Length: 93
Length: 479
Image (cartoon, rainbow over all chains, first blue to last red; front, side):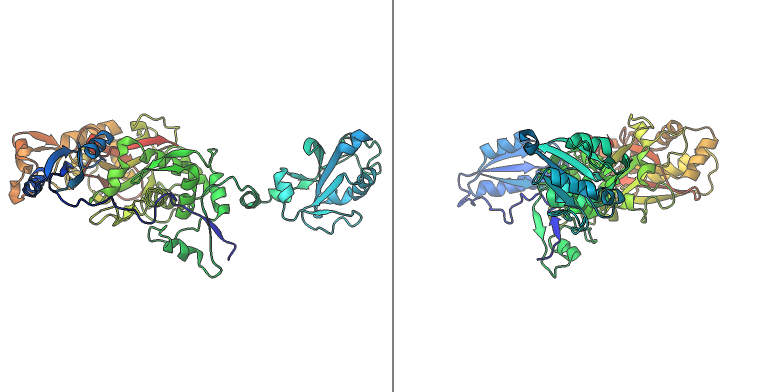
């Protein structure tokens, strides 16, 4: 080994691989949140998604971030995680 | 006798010190009186002094460092491993008092000053801290393999913005930390996008990577604190598909103290302070926050200022308020301001010799920020060059006069800029058709001044389209 020791500039906390949550087996009777991030025409985009989800037997709940430029408020994140089985973030432009 | 047997003496010397050489007979006398209770530590040549047996080799300087030796010779008296007294140099009366030997060194002069301890040599303190102060730094140590290239290994570990970084060795990081009085373990805040708690030590490591000098470190720390203000919205700025990144403007005495460029090529390459301070924040967000291009940084094109974008204001005109003063600070304060922006767009005007012409010229150029038909979205910074500033000053204008005149000249009729107007689909919503609108939201246009004394070239730093409370606002932080 060389004598050079460097100090890690990273957070040292990030896992090498992040485990994804278990996927839903079926959309039937699942509650899917649709989060509008407040980009222009996000509503139209999510309206279309909602139609498809309803046709597949899912229940849909709609949410909206106050502004696309900022992270969603903690309360909104918590509300979605309690009320929904999965969430789709709706982008548009 | 029982009391004296408890008393221990340590003497630290080096051969390269005439006073240490002079006191050689004193050491033999001391050893003869207190056999087994005197330790002689030698910093440079363990064979010195010849007449003293059982000297202790302190060429590693561990004892000297851990006992804060500043001068040799130093005599330390201790009882039960606790220091009770010390003296340094040769002060006969003092040595005699501490050793309780009234005839110690009788033949020598009464007084001869010592020399600097080897621990005090330039750059040595950080080396010793790295070697012997194991609890000072908490970051994971990464030991390189024999044939591993330091700079290449930083690339391979993903720590670089594309340019070579300075390998963050322990010694370099300790040196960086000497630039502040703050504890390495203090948490400065949570770094987006991963919102990871970040210590002063981590900021120092990234400042080393960026190439900063320890003198710059307080400015880097202030830039991090500014970036973490909620008003600045660093998270969103990092994630945006837009061009913008943090632009830094420095005001106050720190400009001279650390040699920031506010003259020729102030926004360009060539000055270490400008180049590395701006880079340090970007590297911190990359390495600690986890914000990387193609990951959460989704910029369509980005802009070259995302490597680094830091400059200082030309404050030579006492009657022209600085950007920091506009933000409520005093001229004597050192302040860093952060703006979410990109650029630069030039304003060439070599003909205007009176302020009304020049302000119209500047306003017309400012109207093209983002898109000539989009108003009230992005903020901007107008960077007035010294020669243009002179045009205003010669006519008796102050910055506030310029600001008011710009406002008046930045109005547009809604009918000219709504969607579809002038055969261009892009534009303001139709509801503005019968309104008069200003190019910038209130508090959306900032004015600063920098650059060389010659050349009638001002500039615009255009801002992020998400401005104001819904996005980012200019923030300032005292250094």
